[in-house]
Amino acid sequence: MNYLTLENVTKTYGEKILFQNISLQISKGQKVALVAKNGSGKTTLLRVIAGQEAPEGEAAQVLPYREVRFGYLEQEPDFLEEHTILDAVLDSDNNIIQAIRRYEHAMLFPDRAENLQKAITEMDDLKAWEFEARIREILNKLNIDELDSLVSTLSGGQKKRLALAKLVIEEPDFLILDEPTNHLDLDMIEWLEEYLQQPGITLLMVTHDRYFLERVCDTIIELENGQLYKYSGNYSDFLYKRATRHETEGAELEKSKKLFNKELEWVRRMPKARGTKAKARVDAFEDLKEKVSEKRENSEVQIDIKGQRLGKKILEAHNISKSYGDKKIVEGFSYKFRRKERVGIVGPNGVGKTTFLKILTQEIRPDGGKVVIGDNTAFGYYTQDGMQLKEDKRVIDVVQDIAEYIPLEKGQKLTAPQLLERFLFNRKQQQVYVSKLSGGERRRLHLLCILMRNPNFLILDEPTNDLDIITLNVLEDFLMDFPGCVLIVTHDRYFMDKIVEHLFVFEGEGRIRDFNGAYSDYREIQKEREREQRREERAEQQKEREQQQAQQRQQQQKAGGLSQEERKELKRLEKQILQLEERKQQITEQFNSTDLSPEKITELSKELAVVNGELEEKEGRWMELAELA
Image (cartoon, rainbow, N blue to C red):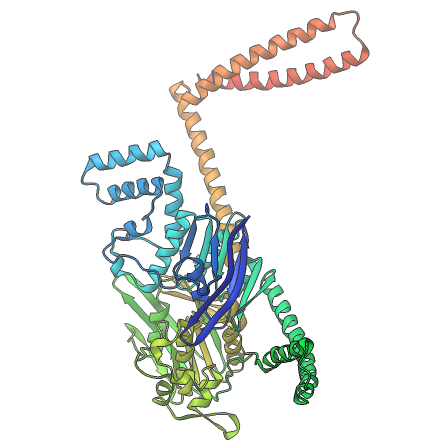
């Protein structure tokens, strides 16, 4: 069953054609990812599909299946600022969700007992308790608490998590997700990944998370040069099939060029006979000319900027501590960075990772200990919130305000316009105002501005948000060869695994553990510890139950009585014993018959043995309970 059909859909942005006459079908249960370079129109296409924007073109059609409920997660969700978190996350037409909201509201404000009792009665009538427990689990997984707080107090990342929770709670038939992993910590991402893998979920999403693409998606569509290309399979399949397509198109382009030269010679002869065949050949030539003239936009970000030389002393933390009230961020942390170290930082949201980075760069003073920065250490700090770029400035002016050129390897220099071109801002785009840039383009410009200062110690706080996969690949290659130090906070597991050599693991209460290995290694060890802990907890629970049962039996023996369950069991045993004795009697009587065949005797003997075994077992249990009674 087709949940969605697009036909001849076009969308332009000013003079730029984002996509033209594209068509697409998505079936029930399909999990589709949309990938493209930043600024290509991914978010716009999602908005068209979700009905947020109208398609262009007379023949354009967006045809959702009429009975399908769509759920759309925007990059920057919009809530009513005066709503509480509870009102926002449970804002739904669903009767059960409305009942749960009234119950949760009554629990938050229990001063009116009649409201709480009414809400409990409604929950009972709708049998909503299981659903309420599931909502609690979702909110807990996404770290959404303090439900009476106002939406206006939330950060952009918290609003994104709130919108995701609302969407999962409502259980739409078709999920449309725009960068769902942004602002989630690693545990949340793994939970969401597991949720989206369910076979009943139909999905279309934009994401740069390559583990998501590998493990969740069965189809990838690429938006390139205004057209859609469809690839069946996951991320690995996409990489192979995309490379094959480009290779094939390259060969076809060579053939087209040869034919073009041949046709060009014919056209220049300007034949006098202009019959139907001749006109058709001229028209075909014009089409071929346009095809050969097309340039494939295969450009990638190029980064070969030379970092300043590091001194002997780079960055040292000596027994640093930091707390905010009762919350410990760092407690007694010491470390000396070495040349070319690449360190990842992991931990749940709110544990203090960004604060830790600011302590290392001396933006925040520690409560105890000290941070020593080497004389030659030059930080390049890519912040999570991005640069505060002036909206009325052109892209070229933003870069030239930092420097007119930057030194490269072997004494060469690169001017600001040339550097911008390497970051996929062509000369025309360099004149564009910052206010016109997409989220990914702003991120790319932010990264360029950091590198323009020629640092030798890069600190990257969530650098992968809103960057396309192509840019991420190039950034990864650059960081692998970067001659200075790299310290990274990221929720992108693929990026982390590829870049870092060891981790600073924030375990809470100010504890930071140095783990030697990649994120996947750490996560596998952590999962095994969690499994072992669960096994120990189950064993402990079983032991406690057995002890409770033993104590209960002792108490009953002293009291000379049975529990209610044991009295019921005693009655059941009496009935069962009576039935078994009757059956035993019946079998015994049949043995008195003189016309039994050997086969029947064998059958009755076996049944009698079974009956005797059951009778012995149940009589033994009856005697045990009778003694207690």
